[in-house]
Length: 124
Image (cartoon, rainbow, N blue to C red; front, side, top):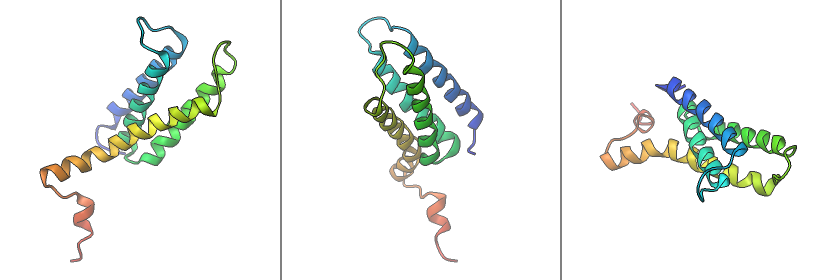
C-alpha cells in the first residue's frame, strides 16, 4: 500500500459510482456516454495503480469491473455487449494505470533524481 492510499481508495469508489451512473443516464450535450465511460475507466486505473503501486493489480481490478458492467448491461435492452466493447475499456484502464506508475519515474528523470530502487541496486 502506498502513502495517502485512503484518498485514492475513496477516489476509486467515487469513480466506480460515477461510471455506474454514466452508463444508466444520458449525458447533456453531445458528450458520449461511451467517451465518459472510457475516461472514467482510465481515471479508475490511475487511482487503483496509485493505491497498490502496481499496474497489473490495477488492470485486473479494472478488467473485472468492466466485465461485471458488461454482464449487467447484457440484461439491459439497447446496450451492446461483447469483447469488442470490453477491450477498449481494458485499454483505457491500462493507459491510466501506466500513467500512474510511470509518472513518478518521469518526474524523477526530469529533476535528475534517482529512484530508491536504482540506489538500492548499487553494491556496497
